[in-house]
Length: 417
Image 1 (spheres, rainbow, N blue to C red):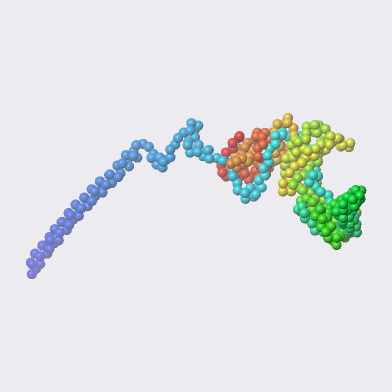
Image 2: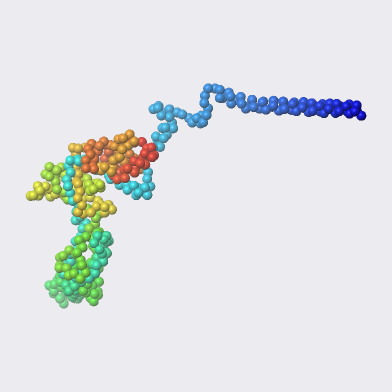
């Protein structure tokens, strides 16, 4: 039994070894064939790449960009960037936030030496003093001092004995004229007709002197029971000034109850020395400076007479006061034209520094706001005599710092046109 066991065991070991050898040989052949196929495929893919990489050039992402020199040391990308540079464009909200103010330069040149002290006064062409030409009693107030009113608004309700008498006289005279006018020429003489007409017109003129309107006078003739009072109507739109009316007060005839002024336009009164006065003429431009605000004005009058005490001549300058930011009574400085200086006056708020440190201002054009370098000739008292700006240029005089910040963020270049 032992012999048989020994005989059987080697036989089984041989059989298993032979099977393993056969299987290993088959797997090796398969792996070799697979490896060969893989190497073939890899070689086919890698060789073109190696050939391209080995030609001594860098074919990376830059191959997609065509670099072309423009003859000035700039490539096409830089040239395109320069062509896309436009002015700074702001929305309406940004303009309001930055308080951008633009002024058009005049053709005049100014001098920082030719300056005169001045005072703002009301524009007499846009100011109305309300002074009824009869004694009146203040029955009611409808406005307060400083209030903005529109033409046709009720200011006061006035009455009194003199008012009632004037209204009654007109009603009687108007009725008589109406009766005479309907009569034939044979029934009334020409002198009587004329007398009735004149009397009616005189009584009407009295009511107009009381500052009653045509509509109020017509309504009065149709309703005699309303005599004794009337409403004082604003003849223009403006601000209520010099308001002295008090309830119950009896105001004598000719006393100014109120003054209305349209502050959208103001005048400047300035005293000039004879030398300064020689350089001004009616219609020439000036610069009016009040605090940190500078506005362009026009000389509209001069006295041609020297004050006996100050030995100065008075001139009048008119300017627009948009937004009613300035008021009558404020002191001002008046910069006068002087062609020999060859420059224009701009406030400090109009000047900023460019990226290279030069002085610049911003000009408003069709494509927005653009920085322009200028030459500052002289600076004093917050004003600057500058050169290098085109005639009639639209210059930013307030809010330039905001534009300079936008310019720095956007990387715009300065172009001196």
